[in-house]
Amino acid sequence: MAKDTEDKEKRNKEDTRVISSEGKAAIAGPPLTLDEARKVAGIRILQSNIPTAALDATNTRKLAEPTPAKLGEERVRLEIRRQKEQERRKREYVATMSLMKARGAWCPKGIAAKAAAAKTFTPLQVVAEGDSWFDYPVPFFGGGIIKRLEDRLGVPILNLAEAGDEVRFMLGVKQRRRLIETLKHGCPAGGSWDVLLFSGGGNDIVDNPMALWLCDWVAGALPENQINSPRYNAALQLIRAGYEDLISLRDSLSSTTHLIFHAYDFAIPDGRGVCHLGPWMKPAFDLHGYPDLNSRFIVVKEMLKQFASMLSNLQAMYPSSVTFINGQGTLPIMNVDAWHNELHPKSDGFDKFADLFQRELKRLFPRKVA
Image (cartoon, rainbow, N blue to C red; front, side, top):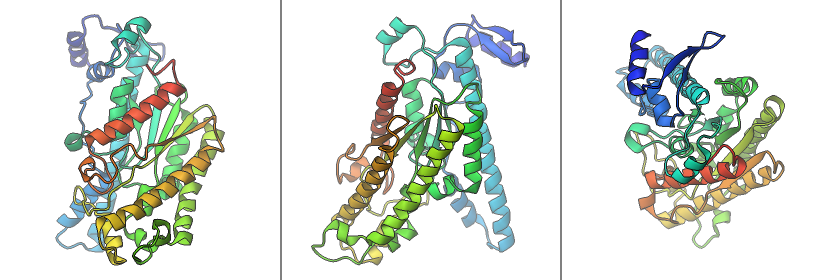
């Protein structure tokens, strides 16, 4: 503890250690940027967050003889690793946000004029749940939307997302319980959540199940006629059910928390994977005889447009408490150079989506987002 205090004093000579009536440590001093708060809290900025699914696949391959017992042991280790990762994220979020609330938070970089005028702003309290668009690997690829959005907002975000996750699991028994606790008890640094960001549905409709909602290729057929509509609509309804339940949980447990959803841009089914995962789309198209990339792409585009339409219709039922960001068309259409693989944009693409989220949050919370 003494060494930690000494280090903090070296980083900021104006720091004065203050103990609250509850016995919790708070630091008095000038306002902090997000990076400064993390440094004061002793948090390393770039922690490894390689998708758990990738670790799972890698470790499974390492098993010399994948017996049921060994696979069971690996599943237990995987679950422990997941829990520790979630605990680490929450611990670091609390440490950082508590400091910024106690000391005040400087406006983010790049808006010096507003920072000079406003001096400080009240930190926005944000929690995120979702898939790899929120939780892409940081060390190698710079992270997904959430890491970039933190930098733009200048506040930490409690990121519960996990690459590869699906809506049916996020709103299933186990993760639903986590969501209930998260909404019921509010921000662990005090107060309620201002906003919950949610990214889900992409993994529910790709990979092996995708073969079920594709028709055999027919030359000249319209994209919508290449899709088995009854089956695909059933998949979309299952995804919608998860979103509906999330809204219901919010309404009953944290009614002032705003929800923000988004649509994925038009992914390119060209057979590229990442981290020994994927491809997630091309194999299904190959199975149904699609002859080239364009024949595959126009069907994926149609499927994603229907996904976006479903979310747009759902949002229209809750215009004051749910926001839908339709980012489709943000990236250049059918430009493989804009995509890191079949499902994920390159760094510039994630930056553009983070900008969309920042603009929307600024509209919703003008006094908290500069």
